Every structure is written in structure tokens, then in C-alpha cells.
Image (tube, rainbow, N blue to C red; front, side):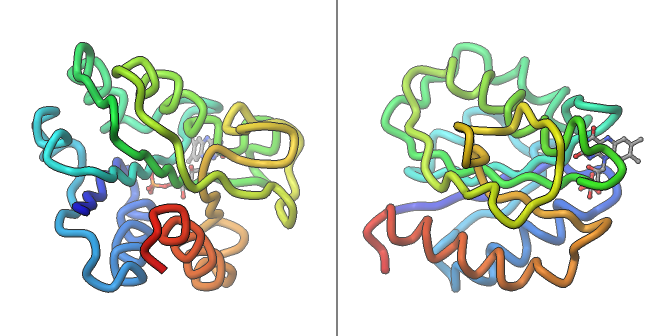
Length: 171
Ligand SMILES: Cc1cc2nc3c(=O)[nH]c(=O)nc-3n(C[C@H](O)[C@H](O)[C@H](O)COP(=O)(O)O)c2cc1C
């Protein structure tokens, strides 16, 4: 099973998280790249795609993804398993926490019929609103808050990667 990690990052926080997730996967992922350095066709090489995105400008996509997503139009990701992680600021942007997770998934799910894995409980996060939610009690993927809760990254990443590996039958 091949795993690729792709992210967009403006100030480097999502990039750092992507590297930590890669480390936690312990060599299971064979590719780690910014979407800015990615040809959309590259995504087809992997069975599992891990996408990382931060939210910017009050509920908007991060710029690298904003540029990349139109290039994914027409791509068929049917059969791929997709796991998402997002960076946001729950204190400064409590009404729009991790919104880009939702914006990203809205576009990715149009690419054939990919399967979302790695949804993550909202329990333990303090925020008001998010379009990054899967349902009442879950985000569409892992949420990380570098601005307010960087001390929780290690434990959140370890638990999320364990969940993803479990869903993939790798644990
Ligand atoms: C101008 C500005 C707008 C932001 N808007 C949001 C937002 O709407 N929702 C959110 O959760 N985080 C928001 N953030 C926080 C970023 O997502 C957060 O700092 C993130 O760690 C940046 O990651 P990156 O360096 O990988 O881009 C905003 C930050 C800035 C500076």
C-alpha cells in the first residue's frame, strides 16, 4: 500500500506538522511534498493520500491549495483513501476554526468517489463554528492549533496516525 503526504503551508506550520506525521508513520509514506511542487497526476500514484491544509483569511483555503485545486478538476480519485489534517487558530478564529478542511473536502470529493478516513473527534477543542466538521462530534480530519496548543501536537498526531493505520489495517 503506497502513501503520499501533500500539504499547503503559508508560514510553515502545516509543513512542520506534515513532517511530524511522516515521522510518526515510520517510513510507511513514500512521498512528502507541497502541492505547489506537485503535478495533479502525481496523486494517482498513491493508494492513500494524506492532505494537509491551514485556514486563512477568515475561513478561506490556504494559498497553495487555492492554486492547486482547480488543477485537480477531472482527476479520478475513485478507490483512493483520503485522510485530512488541518491547522487553525481556535482562539483568534473561533467562528471559522479549521474551515479549510471542509472547503478542501468539498472539492476533493468531486474527484470520482474517494473514501474519507481519519475523521477526528471535536472533543477537547474549544471553538464556536467550523465548516471543517464531518458531523456534530467530528472534524473531517485531524485538527492542530499551532497558535494556542502546540504542546498537544505530539499526542494528537500519535493518536491520529494510530487511528489512520488502524483504518488501513496496518496496525
Ligand atoms: C490573517 C490570518 C487569517 C487566519 N484565518 C484563520 C481562520 O479563518 N480559521 C482558522 O482556524 N485559522 C486561521 N488562521 C490561523 C492559521 O491557520 C494558523 O496560524 C496556521 O497554523 C497557519 O499554518 P501555515 O503556516 O501552515 O499556513 C489565520 C491566520 C492569519 C494570520
